[in-house]
Length: 328
Ligand SMILES: Nc1nc2c(ncn2[C@@H]2O[C@H](COP(=O)(O)OP(=O)(O)OP(=O)(O)O)[C@@H](O)[C@H]2O)c(=O)[nH]1
Image (cartoon, rainbow, N blue to C red; front, top):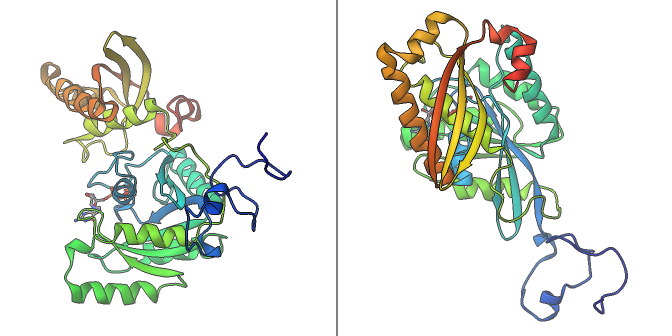
């Protein structure tokens, strides 16, 4: 045992008793620390209407492709956590799908998931794109999150798309929409103000020990990330025809020497959709496989063999059993 006085042992940074100097502080290693500089950690999420830039911003903050972005709304299905590590804080980002009018069981499940996530986080970043007028959708979400315990920060996204005058007007319009702790303009694409936004979010996290180990970027199982990459590739070019009809399940992953063999099923709702996804003489499916494999290899940094099967799961969006099987 060390000569430390009795009391609970300290296992993680910041989990210390106030007033008791650590060994590093005693040796003068950490100078000029103010009492408010304690370690902070907590959960944050971005909300906003579809296409507001939430996933892109999450990726820009974590610095890795952890959520799937697309120019079409509502591609984010799973709650994906990315963990941002800083010397003074840990921000655990939870990515949610957009809240929308439920037309299917899937829609209802997604909305439940969103509300549950909102009630569990410390900080919510309400994203409003700079290049579109503040609208009913933004006001609706602002109202929905107003009563939660979380601190709400308004984030004006995609600032690279507008000039300064338009941005200034949008900042005013957004700040008039609700009672926000702060309003922060940001561009995930150019990176402008991303660090500032993280500083602001960190400020509102509670003092807390580290929540996840240092080397952890995301706790989403690899399979889900891989399935999302396949799904994104399968949607490419056919989004207008089957925007919400594709689901992907990774059935098996087998290590074979330096190669990782991945067997995945691509589910569609109808035989006609199966034909679209496969394409003439399987040409489309081959392209999907090539594109997805490149993405997966980049994600895992290793060689991958990808085997895709297209299957019809009739009306999977409306069937509770199928939804459970597909991970919803
Ligand atoms: N120019 C520009 N485009 C952006 C920026 N952030 C996001 N986008 C684009 O806006 C579109 C939507 O971005 P997403 O991050 O998918 O939006 P989202 O809010 O997660 O969308 P849902 O998953 O549908 O709720 C994509 O085409 C992005 O490339 C930005 O800072 N600048």
